[in-house]
Image (cartoon, rainbow, N blue to C red; front, side, top):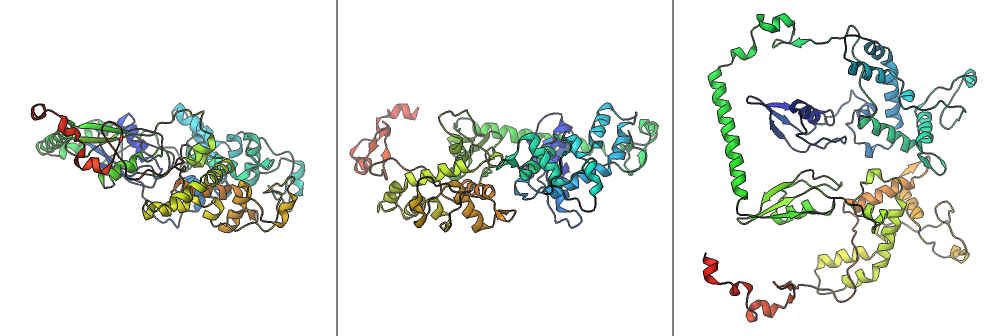
Length: 504
């Protein structure tokens, strides 16, 4: 058994797939994707074991290096500029060494091309045009007035500024440096922008085989002059171990196939993040399958035995184009991953309007004495307007940048109404989301949507109009059956079955 152990997102699962020559385990650019130990048979003598990443406190490695290396999840990175500075300095420091490797005729063509890509400075690798005008907000030059007539140097902020202009990342009519910085780091983590530490100084070591003693072994010695390590292993014991392992695996496979025979298979199929895996755990009464708030967590079909007659099959979410459902509703419903949402305000508007539209209905449900106390409390929470549910204080001053009032001058002496921008503005002030000394409405909006997706802010569509239907049993004919009828006045469906056929 050979185990692959290390930090998250360093390529353990990818190495397993590379060794096996197929996609045997799931891989993802996000750290922490592998959740459990996964054992795979390589050949008659070897098993590979893929393991979840282990994160230990690293005082010798800065936060910027950990971000670029994928140890810190990108969605929680608030400030990308230090990581981009570290990446740019790493490329500059290794430029000469990568250039020498690129020109080395002994390396493969693929290695030469990769080294050439790594030898380029960061702004050239991203194809960012040079700055033509000095902007003190993105580049500070003190004591370097002679540079104004020459090419301007790069700073992390100016690099993100130019990349934002190039790729169309904007906010308020100006380039959005933070979004551009996150996009650059995403390129690194996805493997589209090569990242590697430069090789050590000296002649490159190519085609060297390391022996059992940890020393290099020449080709002639590998051919037969050095005894193979396997010669020292007793063949008889090894064969017995292999036979026992193969027999145990075969017995386990036969037992699993036999367990599924003569059982009804019930499959749970639907959109991502609607609760299929949670329903499986609820039915089984234990945590049998992994669940996560992020859409797309379940990757494969998972079969579980419920009882002597039934199996459950959990499946990955299926996403189909929905022309009848707006993007805002899909974001709130969890069909669109939150990290790719560029603008949260339309989704927050939809959520606030949904709560306002269902307020009367939820209030009626909350006051219904026939419902359970838990249902009453949930309905009470859903009946509150969004700003009250988030405990956001009312706006005391009119700000035209977050709320536009046209033809409603009479409202200035009354309570100001809410808009998605003003709600995010006040929530940012309340929770400390700031940028440049002002509340960061975008970050606050993403935080509100995170509360919904994590289940900490209740979200549900209101029940239909009319009296609530509670405790109704549906019979075999699809019609409601009253309690008295269920007690015995109506013949049970099983009574209509011929006893002789049932015995057969």
